[in-house]
Image (cartoon, rainbow, N blue to C red; front, top):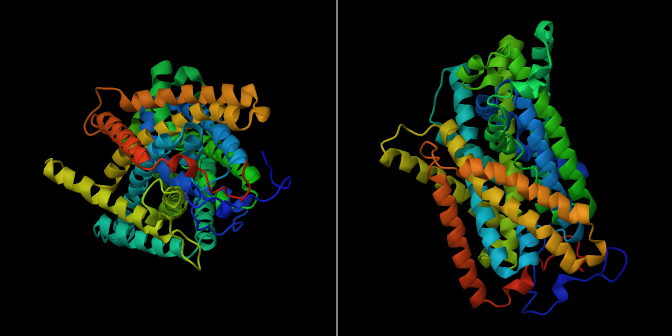
Amino acid sequence: MVEPGSGPLMSVLSASPRARPQHQRLRGGALGLLDIASSTMADIGPAMSFAFGFGFLATTAGVASPLTIVAAALVVALLGNTLSQFSRAHPSAGSFITFVGKTFGGTSAVTTALLVTLGYIIGISAVIAVSGGLLATTLDRYAGWSPPWFVWSLILTGLALALMVRGIVISTKVAGFFFAVEMLVLVIVSVTAIIEHRGHLSLTPFLPSHISNGMSGLAAGFPLAVYLFIGWENSAALAEESENPRRNVGRAVFSSVAIMAVSYVLFAYATVTGFGYAMDKVHASDVPFFTVAQGALGAFTFLAYVAGMTSTLGSLIAGTNSQTRMLFNAGRERLLPAFLGYVHPIRRTPTNAITTFTAAAILIIGGWGLGHVLGHHPAMSATAFFAEASTMATTLILLVYLASNIALPFYYRRYRPTEFRAVRHAVVPALGAAAIVIPLYYLLKPGQPAPYSWFPYLALGLLAASVVYAVIFTRRDPALGERVGSVVADGYEE
């Protein structure tokens, strides 16, 4: 095994043509620790995630919903250990695809590539929809102009696409700026609300006895709380463009999760405090945090809408940047169609992967909306689509999280046995895998209203189809397993 600085550089370009085809590389070392950490938090999109997610969370967990957020943060930290350990050993733009595929072989790599790509495309379609929906709502509120939300979604997506294909550095800087704006507004609203209600502040939101329906309420709200952190894995796929990815990916993951956990607890406490702990009023509000902002900021409530807009745009840019790197790497290693592995010769951006990913997300929005029409349902709103699509996406992504946690101990036992540590590489990922079962159960359990009742069957169908396709594909291409993980982010290989 060769570590950076302790042996000769093993260039992937010098390997045999069959196992290691000539690879196109992204722009190495373009992003520092602050860049990938801010990109990760922009992908999480706290204003967007909290504004449109907390109402559902409060409905299930009640006044003590901040405790559910704390529990979710601990679980995400367990998952962060898995991603950090894999990235320390084998940093790759392929992220989960590489980690699972290197451990279990070509079939698992293709299956993971299909599942994670589908999950992320559906997830980004939710962000695309809500970006246009929020802009339409803002214009209607402050200008009395209400154009169709999907028109704005297309315009905003086009602008973001142009920025992303221009280069990773500028698009990451813009996403980081958007994140800074939303965080500033969120903190101002939260602190102002807490100060205004300082006369009846209490620790009620942090008392387990105030969780609705006890542990069942905590468990029911848990998937929603985990969803607030989706995007925490952003930095791993940026490894090839990062400085010292073996160290910085883990640092970005843990620092981002910690900052988001503290922030969400603050926002949640301010929200329930702003409603005087009256959960019936929280439930009656379409967007509880915006209602609190109205009381805290008055005429400056528009800043909350600005924060929502910067959040959706930051998440759209950061999420697409990261997730398309995984799609690109899968094309580069021929796990998926090779044209996805193309890099622009000057800007060093994976333009084919970015445009394919974005176009597929827009088609999903159109198909989903058509399903509403054909099913004789009301016209699909952006917020309704956001809730439905994000739920479906989370189900698929959680399956990939689960596979990665299972893979970690096997990977270290096989490839790095001298570095294997029982707690770090076995116990912690086992706890992470066990914790993922809880939100998966609540996402897949029967008895949910349509269309959520269809999602378990859709998820299982996609999983089965991905496995069948992967088996057929790997049999036709026996060298596929050797190509998984063939491109290491920093050029050093075991």
